[in-house]
Length: 225
Image 1 (cartoon, rainbow, N blue to C red):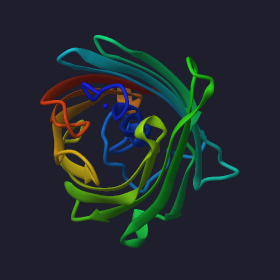
Image 2 (cartoon, rainbow, N blue to C red):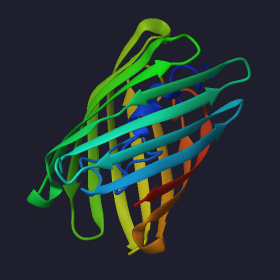
Image 3 (tube, helix red, strand yellow):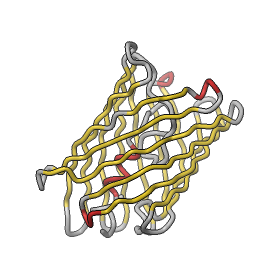
C-alpha cells in the first residue's frame, strides 16, 4: 500500500502490524501499547483498491515473563494488474512507558523478506506515542523511518490518530499520515469488539493510503486468546 500497491503498500503493511488491543491491525498509525501479557492474537485483513490489493496475516504474543515486549511476525501478499509480491517478516514491539502513567511511549520495528526475489525488501522503525484524553478518547502520534528496496527509498514517516469510544464495544478511529514522497493519506473506520473482547471486526475506508492510490477499503478480523 506502483499503482502504488506493489512498492509502497508493503512498508505500510508493516506499520499496520500493531497490537490488536488498540489501534493496530490494518491501521497505519500505531499506539504505544503491546498485547496483554500472557495473550496471543492473530490479525488478518484484506485491503482492496482499483487494480490491486493486499492480504495480510500477522500473529503476535506477549509473554508474562516479558510484559513490555510483543513478539510478532507477518505474511503479506500484494498484487496489481502486473505484479505479485509476497513478504514474510518479523515485527517486534517494545513498550517503553505505559499510558497508565500518563503518556505511553514505544518502539515498533519490522523487517520484510521478499519470497519471489529472495532478499530483504522492507524495514521500518517507528516511535508511537499515546496520549489519553479521558475515558472515551485518546490520541496516537507516530514518527519514524521506512525503507523499501524498490527505488532504494528511505522515507521519514509521521502520523496522527484519534480513537473515540462510542460504546463499550464500538470504537471509531480516524487517522492521517504522510512520508517524504506522495500525497497525505487518511483512513476512518469502525471497530466492533465481540465475544467478550476476544474478537475485533474492522471496516475502514481510506484515501491515498499508499500516497498515490485514490481510495481503498479494508476488512479486518483479529482473534486473541
